[in-house]
Length: 223
Image (tube, rainbow, N blue to C red; front, side, top):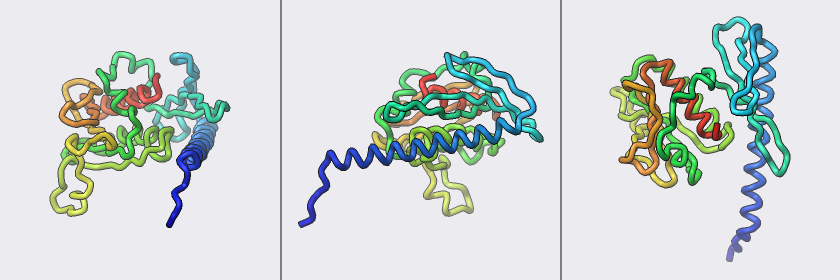
């Protein structure tokens, strides 16, 4: 008869694996930060809620990033994770994460996350950027290390494979978190009560949607 591995040993193994991927994420973020910061031609530094923020614009681009240095503690040792925002965090102060949205995002930690949107949305590349901002933090290569997949809210005509990537709030559960991106009359981040674990991120237009995504990322980190 096969003997089961002791629970204590399993917990230790999972803890060690979690620590290992988190170290890898931090190292990767440090390397990425170093590359961008060495390419900068314009920068300014400031504090946001006690954290160091550096505004950078890589050479040869018009893109501006706000790099937030966030200390992450692993086994008593503090390492820095570099969070890349597309917007100045100070300008996001008026945008609130409503009600229990932050708790629904992380408590308890979901086993799977789907980032979904309507295939009819305009400026789809910006929708993708908004989704990427959240995925970079919550996904397997981010701080939280949760398997994260992009999806659509309905099947796309002529693309049979999209049927397997159709996710809505109705697909959320205790172990599955669904985050839906929408355009709306105002910027909002809130819980859709029709789903057990479904958070809606809304923006008035393509740029405002990315702002809402950045605010969600800050909320995930408690900032």
